[in-house]
Amino acid sequence: MCRGSAVLKGQLLRSLTSADMFTRMLKLRLLNAVAPAYFFMATAVTFILHFCFFIPTIFPNKDTSLRGSATLHTVVFLFLMFNALGNYIMTIKYPAESANETVVPVCSAHCSDKVDAHYLLNGRHFCKLCKKVILKRDHHCFFTGNCIGNKNMRYFIMFCIYTSCTCLYSLVLGVAFLTVEYSISFENPLTFLTLLPLSTGYFFTGTISGLQLFLVLMLYVWLGIGLVCAGFCCQQVLLVAWGQTWCQMQRGQLVDNRSPWRTNLKDVFGTRWILGLILPVQTVETCSEDTDAHKQE
Image (cartoon, rainbow, N blue to C red):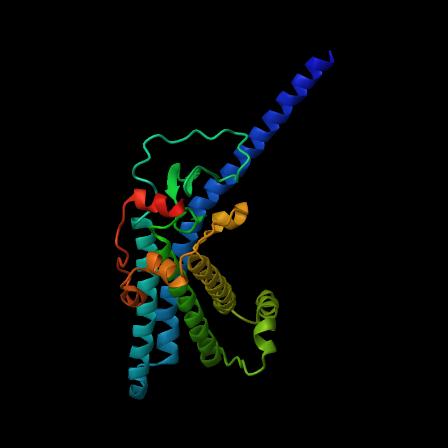
């Protein structure tokens, strides 16, 4: 009787574990679909605000003396956006998956590793979201919908850099627009901290329009995304310089990498890294997966 009860209890625990795993994977797959849509929506909104509101208001066509400034700001914005979107595409175009892995390992429902992936050998991971074996996996990026590894780390870092610059630049133009259009002064440092709650209250009392509230909200969105991308970029650059990955840090299994930091950065950014700073082009020479595996060993 006791043995039957123990077996029944074990089966119940396994079923609960499987159900919990299924629920968490469902949430991750939903996030994997929603995050890219959010990115493109935010990009489209930024484009519209810049060309339909910011530039025409801050630099009106009637004032010929400001045409040069308007052109300069437009070129800078397009340059930042071009590099952000270009590196976004390159991150997807050059996936970190292994082309030599023909047999995909079957992951048990009771896998003791992370929910989204489990560790194989030689720095390889099997991503349960991509359903592919990833070389030197760092993490799964939900905004690009694929894993970040040794092959596309350089593009991902540049994507973070230019996304941060684009958001912070849009933040500056947004502040200038609110100053010109709505006569909001930002001389007091506390103005930005109290802007959103005050604007929300004014909106519900009918004092300000929905457009003004939306612009204020976008200021905080740009600030948040810009700071997060900047911090994440710094973290990734440090990990690359140390020859480590985020997966290794999470597992607590850091590799004893004795290569100098210059060599580690060169492996990711390539010899033409200066060109990669200004254009979303391939700057890393492709190498065989056997070489990558040898480096991991």
